[in-house]
Length: 78
Image (cartoon, rainbow, N blue to C red; front, side):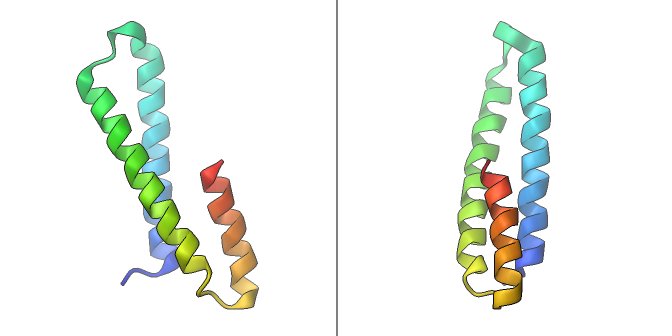
């Protein structure tokens, strides 16, 4: 089982990939390929799943770390 730190790093990478894909989408305009749309959809689904897993994992953290992790996960949701 992955630690919350590893799961956060994985989710953060997906988030950065999504931002890059959105930039590509903006540049492509109406000429957006199905492949790009598919990648976006896949990454959004992955990020959603990882965020839900992180929210579950936050509950298992000790009190000192729980508040910090809540902020991290909340910022990822925004």
